[in-house]
Length: 168
Image 1 (tube, rainbow, N blue to C red):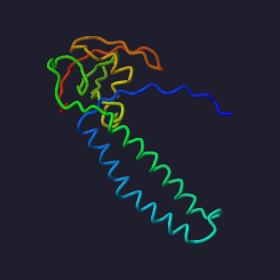
Image 2 (cartoon, rainbow, N blue to C red):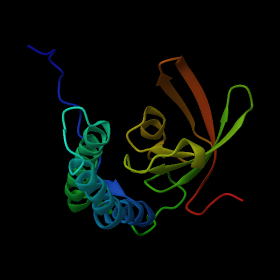
Image 3 (tube, rainbow, N blue to C red):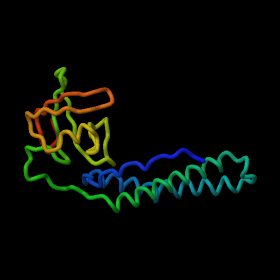
Image 4 (cartoon, rainbow, N blue to C red):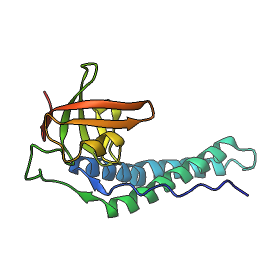
């Protein structure tokens, strides 16, 4: 008997046009390029004989299962996503897709873009709209202070600027 794991909370269905394009490109690559290559390698490994001790065969079967799992997930996820392709009417307020410039209590400056959960990327400073920081920023204006509860404790940020284009 396995351990009980409660279902994970549903993530938001919003995504930027670039994010949807990236997911669609990944699905296309997996389905049209990667899967046929792995299937071909699996057939070659299967032709070598005894499959029970054939490491190449076992590895390719596992790789094919992982590709199929990701293809199923992307296919379902792309069908339910809502593309947000326009700026909000009030661009001085923080909404989905906003670039936000923040200052913490130490005076450090941060730039973040609020995006959907499928496209967050720490290297690009994209944060998920489901994150505690993004949730505390929604509907706030430049000059507002926000308190964010994180695993490290509470942090206080001041919103310096809100814009819907990339910071220079």
